[in-house]
Length: 123
Image (cartoon, rainbow, N blue to C red; front, side):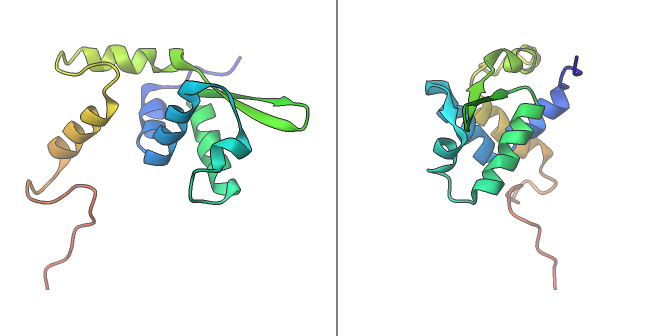
């Protein structure tokens, strides 16, 4: 049996906006890989890499049905992360975007610097 993904693996998978978009899409229903890739502005190979990261984190499962590979959300994989976040008391378990913004502000070296923008060297 494979090792259970760690919180670090789950949060690393959730750190990417494309992967969060994929998870949101899978909230509705299972989807074929090609259907997942359609609205995303990148190659099928790039989307497949994102799906692999999500699968390795235990957030989705994939199975072949005939010639088609299907993706399914595994919501229980977020349980441990949700419990960890609830320990802070100020976060709703489902509000990962707010948690991400909180971390960006807290981890920013320069309070005026957007943590998502690369730092520019003085010169």
